[in-house]
Image (cartoon, rainbow over the protein chains, first blue to last red):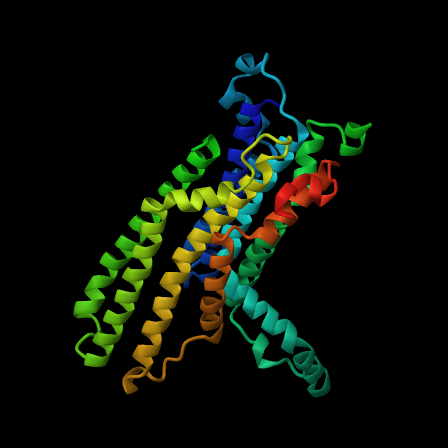
Length: 182
Length: 185
C-alpha cells in the first residue's frame, strides 16, 4: 500500500463511519413517523441506501481507491510501513469515535443510570410478576433507544481504536506483526 | 515554525472558522425568539439576554484562541515530538491533534448546551413555565461535557499515551516507555 493509497483509504474510512452514523438517523426517523407506511418506508429506503454506501466505503473500497489514485501512477511509489498504516487508521477512527461519542454523552449517562437501577427493577418484576412501567414505551421510542445505544457502542469501539477492523484492513496488505519482526 | 506546527495551525484556524460560522448562525437564528418569543416577560427576556451574552463571550474566547492565538495551541500540540528521533515520532502528534480537534468541537457543543441549560433554568423561575422541568440526563450531560472538552483540548495526555502504546503493540514495536516518550516521561 503506497502513501496515496493509504490517504485515500483513510478518507473513505472516515466517510464510511460518518455515513453509517447518518444512516442510523433515518432508521430512527422511520420509527418516529406518524400514521401511514409510505414516509416510514421512504426513510427505511434511505437508511438502506446509506448503509450500503457506508459498507462500500468501509469494507469494499478497493475498486474506488484504485480509481481515485490511478494504479499506473503508483507503480513506482514505495509502500508505506505497517506503523504508518496502523497509526493512520487508528488516528482517523479515534477522531471519528470522539466526535460520535461527544454527541452521545446523555445516552451514556442514561445507560449507566439504568444499569445501576436495573437489578432492583428486575427483582421487583420477578416478585410482583408484572412488567415495570419503565418498559412501557411506544415502539418508536424503543427503536430510538436501540439506535442511540448502537451509536454510543460504535463510538466506544472507535475510541478504543477499532482493533479488529484495523487488523482486518492490515491483513489485506501486510504480514502479521509477529512475522514482520522475524 | 516547522511543518507540524504549520499543519496544526492550519487545522486549528479552519476549525476556528467553522466554530465562528456555527455560533454566528446559531445566534442569528435565535434572535427572533429573543424579540418576538416569550420576551414580553421581563424575567425571561433578561434570562435570555444573560444566556446570549454568556454564549457570545464563550464563543468569542474560543474563536479568539483558535484564530488569533492558534500558535500557542499548535505549539502545544506539536510538543516535543519535532525531531525525527524514530519512525513513530508523528504518532503522538497525530493523536494529540485528533483529540484537540475533537475537544474543540465538543467545547463548541458544550457552550451551546450550557447556555441552553441556563436559559431553561431562567425560564423555569417563571411560574408559567415551572411545570416544564429539564431532563436530568441533559443537565448531567451538559456538566460532564465541559471538563471532558477541556481535557481533550489540553491534549488528553493519558489517552494519547495509551493510544500510542496500543498502536505500537499492534505493530509489535512496543518498547519501554523511556525509549518512546524520551524526556517527557
